[in-house]
Length: 376
Image 1 (tube, rainbow, N blue to C red):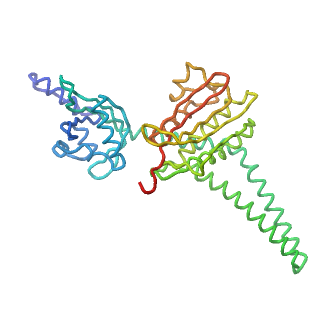
Image 2 (cartoon, rainbow, N blue to C red; image 1 turned 180 degrees about the vertical axis):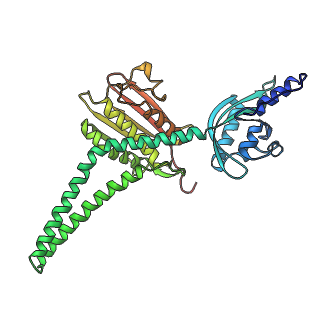
Image 3 (cartoon, rainbow, N blue to C red; image 1 turned 90 degrees about the vertical axis):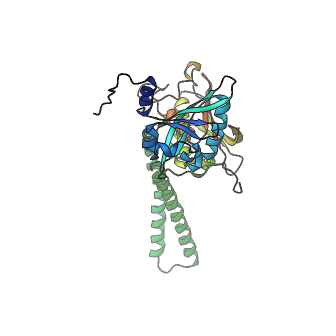
């Protein structure tokens, strides 16, 4: 283990402060009113692969990834006016590699209230992102586990059709050369076999895709399709509690930009929670609606998931998104589902809000930004 030594007892306080900043585990930088970096510490050199001389005077935009440039521009303007801000963003090193960070910034003003510069602390959150990816994947596998008890039934039905239809084909062929009527029956049996085989193939494909690890590329995703897939993956649990699903989608598609498996996981978590909440209720209904809205001054899709379950006590509403916090009985929940859900939504630049009345039900409102028009 290396040790830092200060031999000169007369060293100035400013020098000590500089040493502390240089050995701080996070990037620290200061940006002037023109958006130029006027100070940075050694950690920035290590993580971004620039020398300090290269960083000083550089536009702050140059150390951010291309996909967040608009957000950086808007954030800097907002920071100059409001004074402080905490966001997640993505840096870009000199070699082009990206680095997810959490940024805490505040502004400095002169006596007249004029803006002078910002100071920001940028924390490398790669370990957090890797842990979150592992938790999301584990959550998906848990959903697969809940589905597994119903898979046998979902496969057995089309498999029975295949076996019976194949037996009828063999019987027809055993009668000798088929006449016109027999050909028609054979074609019908063949169609049944094809439809049943595709049903099994669809189930297998969905299970395989859903259990994959997290993709790192965001693409255009249809929210309605994600909800339908989430209903499919939780279908066995829905049947077990006899939950009445009311899914209202007025438009054909609700396009956002994101990772489809992760958005599907959000809705699978909420549907699964609703199943648990309504188990002891007389009226067992889950309503899902999607409508156009706005979030953070951008067009968004507002998805509302409402159950008629037991509800959440008002004093617990602020805690339900915390890791390992659960309102379920001991052994029936890890307290990670809603924490993972919020993490995914925020990764997609959206937000999730909860509203609940104890004894009557709970609503989760999810904002996901609309994909920009194709000609934008």
